[in-house]
Length: 175
Image 1 (cartoon, rainbow, N blue to C red):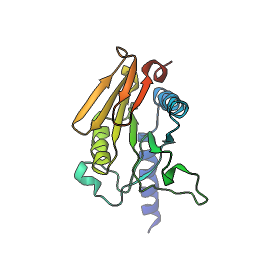
Image 2: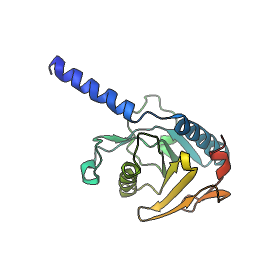
Image 3: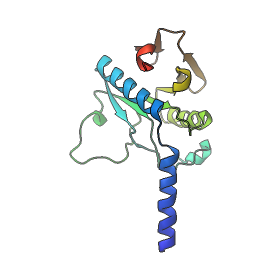
């Protein structure tokens, strides 16, 4: 590999990191929701920005540019899962899919891009996906790829029927 090739690869990595860089709203909602899930549900382990191994599937069939991994902003595993324990040898990519994948829209992301990820997650066995839009204070909960329900400030709580999760919406968007 030439020096020019290495530079190009590093440049592409940097551009991807900038593209997916969070924002104030994204970061705040991610922290608040993670804390709320941790404090409310001891049956789940909460992970932030965990790399899910996608090497077993061709992501281009879903119009996704990524090749080997997807990283939900937040994901949940059963507390009984093998992935819910600290490892002596850390794992870079997890092959076991989570029960729940949560994506929080940031200013540089499109909703279409996130919906394409949801299609992959459901295809690989994820039970539920949440699309959070901080600027609208809305959460769209997908129980499968074709079925979803939007919760916003007109609701007192969000409900994920697949995982029996009930959370007060005002605590997620408490600015």
